[in-house]
Image (cartoon, rainbow over all chains, first blue to last red; front, side, top):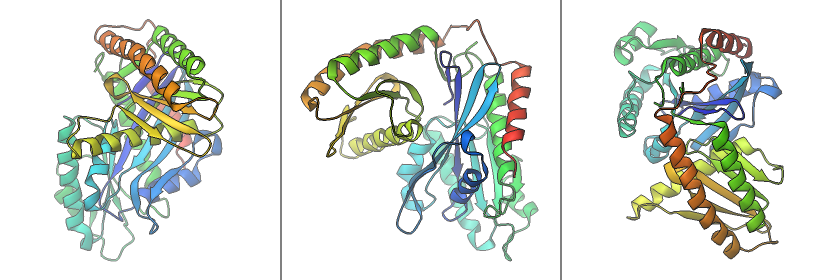
Amino acid sequence: MSLINYSSREINCKVVYYGPGLGGKTTNIQYIYDKLAPDTKGKLVTLATEMDRTLFFDFLPLELGEVKGFKTRFHLYTVPGQVYYNASRKLILRGCDGIVFVADSSEARFDANVESLYNLHENLKEYDLDLDTIPFVMQWNKRDLPDALPVSELNEELNPEGFDHFGAVAYKGDGVFDTLKCVAKQVLRKLQTQPAGV
Amino acid sequence: MVRAEWAIFEEDFWAISNALEALVQSSQAKHVLLVDRTGQLIAQAGDEPTFDVQSFASLCAADFEANHALAKLIGEDDFANLYHQGAQDSMYLGKIAKGVVLAVIFDKSTTLGLVRLRVKKAVEELNVIIDGLYDKLQYRNEEYDPFDDEFSEGVEQEIDNLFVD
């Protein structure tokens, strides 16, 4: 839910990284955090278990420079991927302006992708949202795995709607910024075309 | 034209800030912050915080949302207020209209009873402001609308410049 503050001249938008457990959502955020200059990023907050699995969410605020007197800020969140943390996932999705789905390209994780995508649809329904109206980008992560499925096959099975998509190797940074740029631009374009008070 | 799902206008921002300032004075709290339900900071008053307010706002909203879900699980509609007790500083959270959260941080120079009492009054006042603000979104047109093509191009340029390997 984007928030415009006309007094402090700020625009805040929320982007959520979704996907199956161990798919690389936190790795995406961590890479972005490591690469950005200190003055453009806030603190990276991670609520993780002792095993470094995301328990509730990761949170990273990013700040763009001023344009026409307004400062734009993106709040990046990840959700916990494990199936049994659905209550937490639902909470994080509330009010999001854009979604990145980080899919695991590995053949062995194909079913986990399907399940997570289905879960995303279900959770969005509860907020009266769907992927046709909310900015959405697919990321095929772990392209370097020996059992990575071809992108064409992943698109056919998981992205028949033809949403924007990027191949990625998140721990090396490949595709991480391409994905973020794409979703950020979609969110801002939607803000420009959105009718009043919606 | 208001483009976002919700927006804070100049006059509402000052009305909110005044209400928060009044709460700081009357409750003798250290900091008072207003956070929306997605974890975005709306306004704050009191001493300049020494902690990261962005992280605070994000965690605060998550805290409230998690407790809301807990309330539902045990058959309650919601927990209207939450209290976290610390050795030095404590926190009292109150729910405002539209899922907005009021967070009050206070130390031993005041009491929970006083904070609770003052928050109750502030919540009533803020409810009116926030509800009014939502009503306004239906018809309000801002005189200054930055969201034209020039704005989009500028922001996209910013995105390209910032997000590079």
